[in-house]
Image (cartoon, helix red, strand yellow):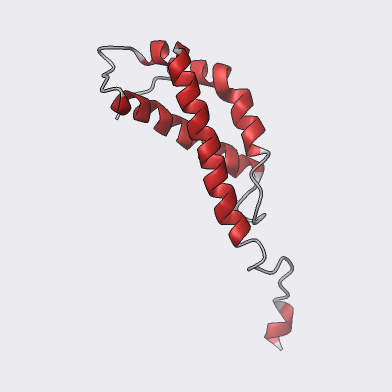
Length: 113
């Protein structure tokens, strides 16, 4: 697990924050599970996983290449964007599958009679 400092995360947010916001608005499906704030948080977790995955995939350590240098890397940018879009597609498919399963307006008063 790679330790990501506040400075590293701010750098990541500067570079990919707009993309995360853009993707979060496009995840559709069950409205209970797909609100904007929850999507942003889920994508932030996917972003952290992309950083860890990049280090693992390339057999790097933080001592070899600092996180700030990895974030500035063009290959990492492609890798991270792919991870974010794949997460969006995966979550969107799951949520769309269950969209019509749950009733939007559930009347609880009729059961208290």
